[in-house]
Image 1 (cartoon, each protein chain N blue to C red):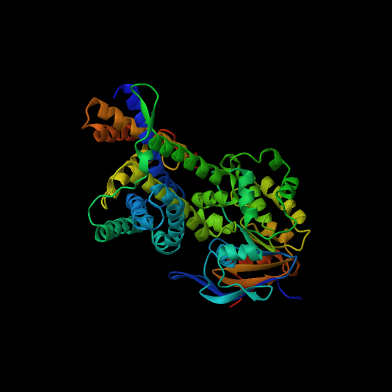
Image 2 (image 1 turned 135 degrees about the vertical axis):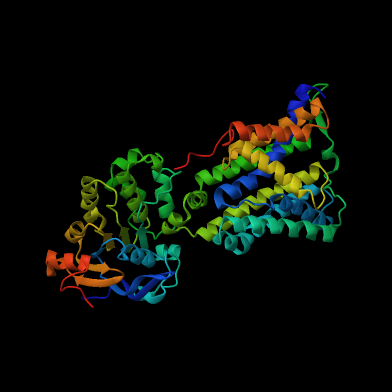
Length: 289
Length: 241
């Protein structure tokens, strides 16, 4: 590895982090839920693919067709039932409820799939790469994940900015009661926002499963990286989330270039440095009122 | 009172915990009228309006719109049926532009004559500035956008909650001067005001609240300013038992 390659790999890894952070950012910025079960939900997405794929196709790319829609519906229903109830009784309750959900998910996955790690097989694509030069090679899979991350973030951003439903989601985020006064069915709209967040979680989980191995307890680490990406980028700003993911990815790979054992640590240190110097993140959200 | 009221509340009692904000209040608003609810601070005016809009639950009593019982409906369901509130404090969406605020109001309202264009025609300054964030507007401008956001939902009954609060008198007069232009359809307007004189100038009928009870009602011309003042502050012979 050389430095240029480390930067290229860091940006590619950033795509995965950004994809992870997107749902977390959306759920916090729009619905007001800090979802501590975020990482476990992503892992759940991987396991849903593990469980259902054998009856569909051997290539895990097919899971992209059915897992995200399932998660969209799952998100809408859990918002209308579990999450809305916890929101109604205060922000601390949502922390407790999502933490509880995290524990339940981890243990249910342990029960159902054992502690062995799994991965999602996508055939030859997992190892194929093109060589920019003798020292830099770009994995198709990693590049694909980065492209998906940018497309998802841009798509969500456009949806929120341009569509009527997107405007209503922003209205609820600004002032829920005022949105109801303006005729917005706030529970339905919040359910849609949660559904979108869950779709991105499923995509992130599948991407991670194709990229690395996962076990029922992988979620906590993923949650930490997602949090770091969101906070580095700036809370509630989707482009900031992409920047945050890339900064974190760069820090980890450049750190690993210095010393292979230090990658994650350098990532955490950069996160702490941003938090100390620029607590609102690199690209803070739209100006508050 | 003649005709069938468009909006009617019967025996409306609203409690917030220990506090009873409204005690068995009756109100009946005739179609096409401007009807005013006046009263001092804490008389229950805003609670009445917010209960009619569905933001507070009635402890007892019923609310009907054109004879249909809407007591159990949520706020957004009432908007779809034509009861639209302009809330106290404007409550615009600060991260959004004027145009986006109006589009949210129009998205779930009834279809009708009121479009964004018609609002821009009525308040002409808005058209050129429709891409501005509402958090940058003055209080009076925000109030007008808030009224516009309600109008594009094509209300049958428009509820205006303290629209003069915190605004300069000249701004308030300008807003009230546009009221007749809003009324050329069959829209009914229910206003809540602390400024009694302002309310009496525009209202066909009024009701005065004191500590959650009705102390005086009728047409403004039927009562002397002294009687209204007595009902407002709660002294003198006009106070009902």
